[in-house]
Amino acid sequence: MRSVLVLAVGVVAVAVLAARSADQFVTRQSSATIAAAPADAPQSDAASPGSVVLLADRLGHFHADGRVDGRHVDFLVDTGASVVALTARSAAQLGIHPLPRDFTAQARTANGVVRTAFVQLGMVEVGGILVRDVGAVIFPADALSDNLLGMSFLSRLRRFESARGKLVLEQ
View: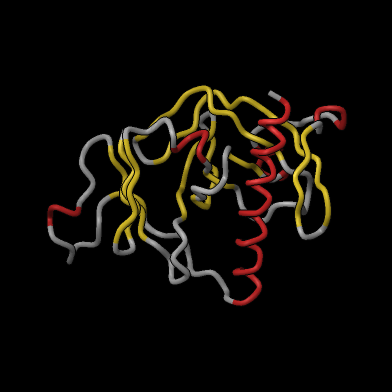
């Protein structure tokens, strides 16, 4: 189990580095809209019950306004991240305060090895999609720039599909 967690955190670290590199070159546009497609889109592109449509920003990233255990959290959707990853700041705002001894997993980043803490989130919600008991890791302060909505959430959906600047999440 520990080696799987270390591997998962490594994958998250690579995704974080890619996001940080993109942030250095281009100022990110405001978060994409969640819910229905734009008014000028064909009606068939609108979100149906149990689904959410996210629109890509100008860099092709998908941002989601989410909720973790009932509290607002902004996410960058990252299919390359094995688990949901939270910044230390977001974790603290959620009332999650891992002790130094809880940081037992390691993630390799451009800045070296970073220790992370594994947690179990009661629920993660994006739009009307709710997933319970979601595994996540907490990164220490300044080690992660964005919260990542990873596969510990996405793999529990019926489907997710990206095409033409839209990401459809379906429960």
